Length: 206
Image 1 (cartoon, rainbow, N blue to C red):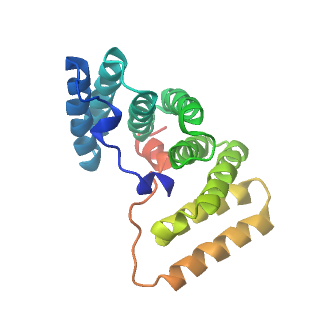
Image 2 (cartoon, rainbow, N blue to C red):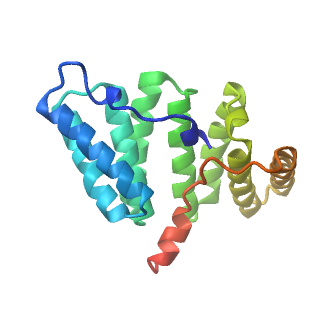
């Protein structure tokens, strides 16, 4: 999972001579991360919305705006506010493609989240399109070595979406690779697990 391999630091939100808005953005960012870790996505949504407002007002760099938008979108998705999440994550993707390029780790993080959003929307073809790009980037950057078991979980999700669109051969290949990664890394656990937005929507009764 690409978003596992990068930690967002306050440096993306503020400069050495931070304005009050930039300091507020850092404060709310930390609060949003804690709320997310606690599973309190309603509070995370509030805090990340404030991060984004203050980051924009404080003229944070593009990388900071992109990450604030990304975190806000993920909180929305975990609350099954899927259309709002899609809009925010798409904005974050566009910002990051311009800022760090189409194959960067940061861009790949956003591609994976959009794949999961499309899964929640029951749009497997679109989900596969995002997974294709993201997984290609993972291989090119050789990032899977950082969390092979976590990446195996991504491959499981990818296989499920491939199966839905009738790509049975590719689905089987993805399952086989996921199984192989777990066997080769027996005893290791995933660094983090992908958020299941479909489950979030199911829990909300939608």
